[in-house]
Length: 236
Image 1 (cartoon, one colour):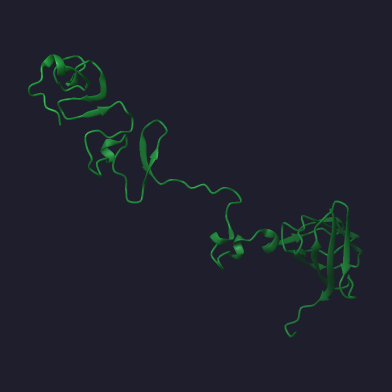
Image 2 (cartoon, rainbow, N blue to C red):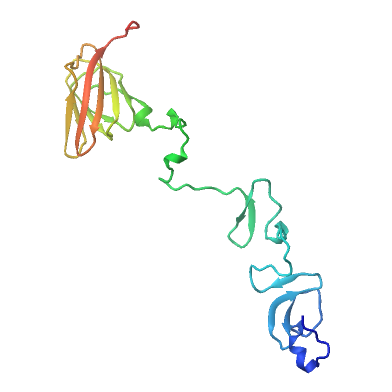
C-alpha cells in the first residue's frame, strides 16, 4: 500500500477520500469522493451505515450469512417451511408459494402405481344413469355413465340415440321391457354400423339387458352389441 510520507499535498490530495461537500461526518449518510471531486458511489454516516449506489452490491464485508430479515423490507422472521415472496412493490412477505401445474403437463411417471381410484375416473366409466323415457327418441350419452337403467316399461316405439361414445368403451342398458320396437342410432358424422353378436333378440315380454361396445368412434362409427333377457335368480 502506498504511503503519503514524504509526498507533498499538492501532488497527492486528489488521491484522498473526503466527503463530497467537504464537511465532516454526521449522523446522515454523506457521499464520498476523491480529492478531485470524483464521486466513488459510497455514502457513510457516523453510525457505521454504508450505502452503495450500485444496487444489489454488499459493501464493507466479506462475511457469509450477513443478510437476514432485518436487512430486507419484510415483517418478522416467518415460520418454519415458509418462503420469502415478493409483494410486487419492492417489499416481501413470508408465505407458502402456490404451485400451478399447466393443463396436460402431468406425465405417467408422476403417477404412483395403483393409486388412481374409482372415484377419480370420469363418469363414462363409473356412473349409473336412470332413464324414465317410455317411447320416442331417447338420448344415451356415453360420457354420462357406463350403466343405464330404464325405470319404466316401454309404451311405444323407442330409438336409442348414442352420443359422446369412445372407441373401446362398453356400456350396459338394463330394465328394458315392454313389447315395443327398439332401434339403435348415433350422431356419427357420416354413418354408423350396428353388429349384433349371437342370435338372441329383444323380448319385450321380459326384462332385457343390452350391452354395446364401440369398436370405432370415427365418422363411420361401428358398434357391436348383444341383448338377452334376465330374471332374478340366486342359483346360477
